[in-house]
Length: 348
DNA sequence: AATGCGGGGAC
DNA sequence: GTCCCAGCATT
Image (cartoon, rainbow, N blue to C red; front, side, top):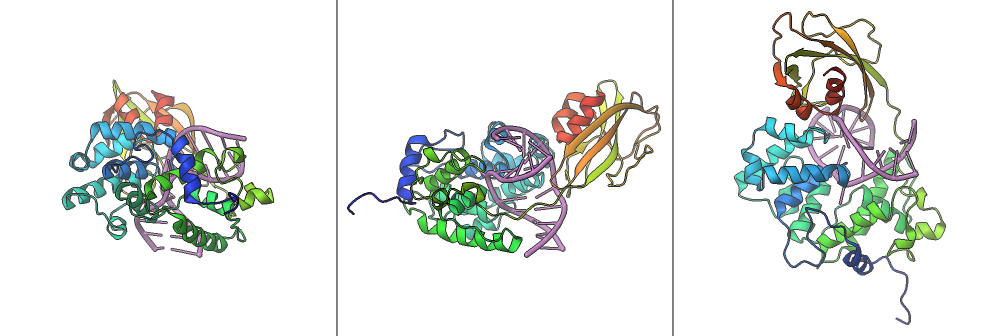
């Protein structure tokens, strides 16, 4: 070569990563000879699904302190796991986390193949590839939202922004990035791509001047970085309304465990009405007869609807409710998902 | 292929 | 307010 040409290579990305890798609790430094503990890689990947690093980090530190090995997590109860997961969201992850820990403990360790990993609960194509690349040094590229964005910009891949077009784009992106994976450093490559997407090639106002692929990036050459990736539009969220009831007796409060699957599955919540799109003006869903007093409104945004809960508070139970439990105030706040915490804070 | 499933940070 | 994030399971 007569001159160094602008490139989109793993070498230039890894050279950047060697200098700028983030220091994260589940990571080993770039170029480190030993592979990281598969348990810690797996735990971090599950927590980081659709979840930011700052949000997941304290949970990762807490979980590894409580349960240092996968066998420890397998020995925990599901209620312990969901309580510690409270506030992190997507609670099916917590249920699958415990199932997966039990399966791995039974197997005697994590499977060291993509197919073996894929067979475990809560592990899909992305997470299987991430664990394989980072923990087992298998030359494969995990493809997450960050990497989709980086690759779609670097190679100017953008279809018609329909669900079908975006699905085709994703296949092309996955094929492309898997061609670039360096066989000797697949784990560092995966994490370098994530750091690049998270800190440099951001959804809005990317910091192209800091990017190791600046010169080769086709989207930048077009001056249209934010046109990539071309994702389909999201549907507007409907509004739902309901009532929530905080019944207090001294230092305990009445809580109810939700059904094991579905929205907030298996989580502890103050009892209440159904959540409907049509306004329920009259109070409904109270666990017992009581002198209910208004305590304000709790608002919350879920993935596919917005919720307003009218909160009611009473001091002493008039009768014993069925299928619910009395929980210490602090324990209730700790174990409840965020909407439950909002309700409790209005009434306690 | 489409839908259900949390929460928070950046803008 | 909008967008999106180290996605998966289910249908």
